[in-house]
Length: 75
Image (cartoon, rainbow, N blue to C red; front, side):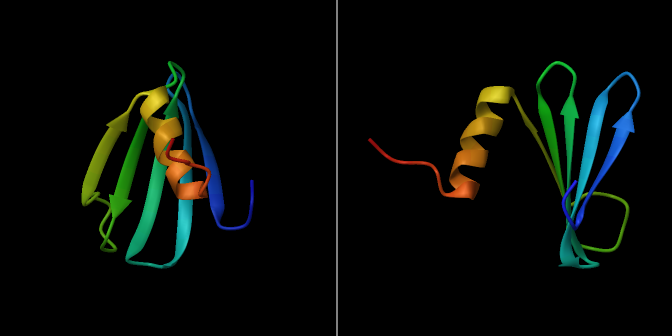
């Protein structure tokens, strides 16, 4: 994938995308499950334990993505 994004196949589950934010103590992982749901893991320390985990269905994930990419427009 692009520079700073690492992809790992998770057999029977889906794919994990590890996103390098440029600092060892800040990183994000997204697991895209075969059923379309996503798990967002936020790490704020160098620990392997996430500081927060958010489960999103595919519709919720699209809404978050639209806001993050600047394509969300309020009607």
